[in-house]
Amino acid sequence: MAGLGAGRCAGIATAPARTALCLLLAALGLGLPSQGQRPPANIAPIVDALQHQDFATALRLGQTILAKEPGNYVVWTLRGMASAGMGNLRQALAAYQHALRLAPVYLPAMEGAAQTQFQLKSPEARELLLKILAQRPDDPTTHLLLGILDFNAGKCTDAVDHFAKADRALATRPEALNEYGACLAQLKRFDDAVAVFASALKLKPARREARYNLALAQWQDNNPDDALATLKPLVESAPVSSDALALSAEILETRQDTVLAVALLRKALLADPKNIDAYLDFASLSFDHASPQAGIDILNAGLTQLPNESKLYLVRGILLTQLGEFTQAAQDFETASRIDPRVQLLGVAEGLVESQQHNPARALARFRAAVKLHPNDAYAHYLLAEALESEGMHPGSAEYKEEVDAAAKAVKLDPHLVAARDLLASIYFENGQTDLAIEQSREAIALDPKDQQAVYHLIVALRKTDQKDQIPALLKRLMELRANPVNRQPGAKQYRLTVAKDASDDASQ
Image 1 (cartoon, one colour):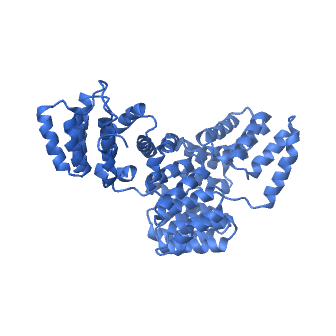
Image 2: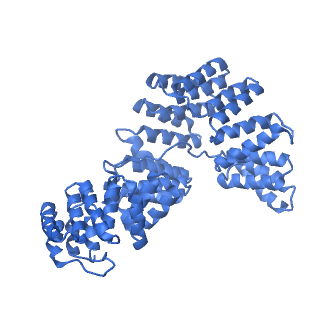
């Protein structure tokens, strides 16, 4: 490592308040001002004190020099390092900023200020990091910190770009690796996410969140056996992980092992009676197997633990509609709305009740109200379009235009909502818009290769084109799909991230 006294950097212990010390000391020999002057030789004792973590001495020596040379930006930078080493981040930032006023392009001061602002969670950190990147476009630490900032801002595309360039700075930081993996998964890059989560788990094998994340990514990457094997220590060890049990149950259910899936969900609820995801998973399983009463019984138990959880009332109401208990279902929807007026899909659930009571006019009113209340809810738009489509609206009518607009809006809001693309393909085909129907069917198949409805739509649409040579292969594919159960991917499962006590600790160790 180049720079003054860099040979002893390896002896500096890592700590949150002095994360960049070695890096900054090394940079002193590289980050020269535009005049090309080298740092004065009299700073050597300060550098030596910093390398030995004698921060008080470094401050004292620096103060002596600054009394005679108040414009010495290098010493101001060293003062910032010493203050950071003593845990006084505000004083450190003031020293770095003073150095930058004296020498705006002095890289060590810029790096110190950026790292300190990052630790202080200041929004100004990004601007400085980008300035550093302009001077050192391949700097892995700068890319790492920008990746973390973008992850925290919900900008996964940008975060992934920076994490990919973080290289060595990322390789030993499990929390940053988990954030990287979560963003890769959000971008549907499951294979890459598996590799990143595996690296995070290798660094800290005992970290339960890292093991759960790896299993979830493995399942999303269509490797259920690997996922179950990864989850096994969480399911069998004490204390048992209720989240791991619930995820294992969901995987087993897709393999038609319903008995074991139910047993694991019950075990999850015993381990954590307040695990709302386990209640919702059990209710979903009950709905899928036309066993609403079993789900209602579990939700009743859940409401004794979580009496103010709107989602439990909402889901119980949906199960009650399956039993035909429409009055009780409506009461549950009303209770859910009273507890949380913002609860998602409430208007949709009420519309489902009206639909099952064969009251299409009231159902449409419910769906329209849901769309108005949640204009950015893709699923609400989809169900409105589906309800209109079931009424057989005539092309050219205002209702038909509303149907097309709602389906198109659903796809625009959520391009990954396969059901909306299937519906839009059906609408286009019935209206003679074959090319658009083919386009939507192909998009749906790209999202879900096991979507039988999309394959069927594509077959019937291609019969009206000169692309009939594709039909035999599609027919074979449809038969294979009908012969095998469709695997279900995890929907609402979220990656688990542990927030460090100091967010900058893991990012800079």
